Figure 1 (cartoon, rainbow, N blue to C red):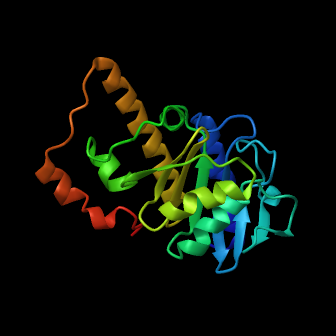
Figure 2: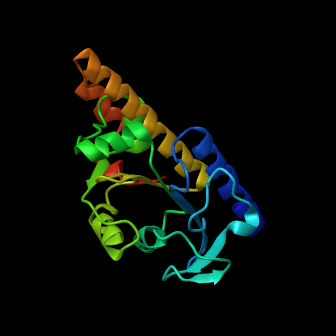
Length: 212
């Protein structure tokens, strides 16, 4: 995609997140890699359900605005991911209710209960708390970037990486779906993992952090 198409894709994905209730009010932030040192990011304080292409901010590898208004206060989280993961072309941070409840409770989302969890999410990292809008948030996720592509942010929300914006969105939607199923299964009193031989075939441990 060229820059015009990427701006439109960010707006459309923001609408989908908002419509699905994965973000509310001005929550969440999205970005895509435009070049090795340039990224497109959603603006600060804007509803992700009502973005226009002209609202999208061009930032550099330090998270500073190059063209447009003020980027999200959590742009540092995105830049930290891009700099450590050259295979990542898109990052989404959202507050999906079920997944965020796991982050608040400090509960793991296991990857061996549903094929979607194993294949799409991989091993879901539990990232320690980092205050939003500070360097601490980016620093808290850095140790987990090499081996994970899906993250629960303690007392905050979730973040995912993608090969493109569609891949990142699908991973976020899958995370919330898996978290919802786990929540319902817990209420029924039992969570049964997949057989080990099946899990080992569809999700080798060495592939958990790979996007391709």
